[in-house]
Image (cartoon, rainbow, N blue to C red):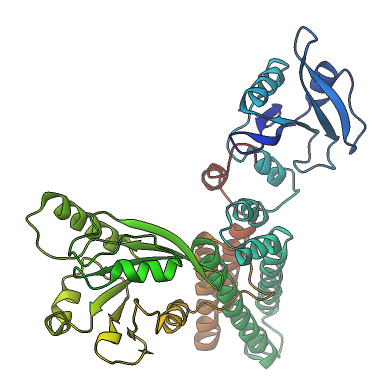
Length: 446
């Protein structure tokens, strides 16, 4: 694979559709257009053309758009062929383009070329994939803000503030004979404190963004007949799981994707936890243990009307195969005349009547510190949080070295390292391995 190759791919989803698009990028676009269409289309204008095969017979008829580089998404010449969206038609059209000298694009290669040609930075490129994969309107809006460069701008502003502070410290190192103690003056301390505050703000913004993007994996567990499936149905808003009075009805893991005010939840209902001689039920319990080990949070459901289950709660919690945070849900409060309530670790509700469900939803948002997006939340990824954490650690060490030792050279080095970590977010400092992992997760036509 060479960046000088002309690449092509079907840019629309597989299957039948009204319109399908084949996208081509590279210096060979004009030659492909002449052979396929008879001439190169007028730049940035949609033109009706017949798409011709090698014998001059039409494959399809549709719109052709030509974007000469560098004024294109990839920064190269780009040709888009909008035809009828049948899989056979799209396959024939792509084959013809490949015959004319293009090669199949790798996953994410169009966006990778946009990054390499400085059309997007790395955070913006990742936002393209986040926008495509967004699971809620809030996540889509956050991804679009990051795609427009709002997250990158905040990272750049923070990096610029770190650079200015580093220049101040290095100036103090270069002129040690000056009577003024630059390393001990109040403006320097104020600048450092401002940067620490900005790190905290940006880290919180990014954390909210990762919640919008990745969501929370929530595993519902408990003894048989505690009301786990009824709770899943209430959260999902429809009958996703079979509910009966027979213990052990749920034999396999049921998965539902829901959202609470924009917070995506991957909710898993599991088989009731008990010893069972039934081979199928035992397999379901084994799978429940496997999912519990992967959970971000566990909802442990207890039948509030079952005195034995309530008494065994501590032992049941101790036996869970996970250290994930857990919320104890006392269900069936309607059977004991209880009232809905919630605190930091417990929720009392009735899945049968719906009483207390709003308390549970608010409890889940509070547990992860999620706030509805508003206008400030930006799409972010775990790697961004990791880079911010490392950069922030360097700034905190710089603060310690400055206040405790006035060690200018060491402070400057810590600030330099903080800049490098921030550069990883936008791709100013990166590696081929990181780029491969990021763009390899994209769909082919993007």
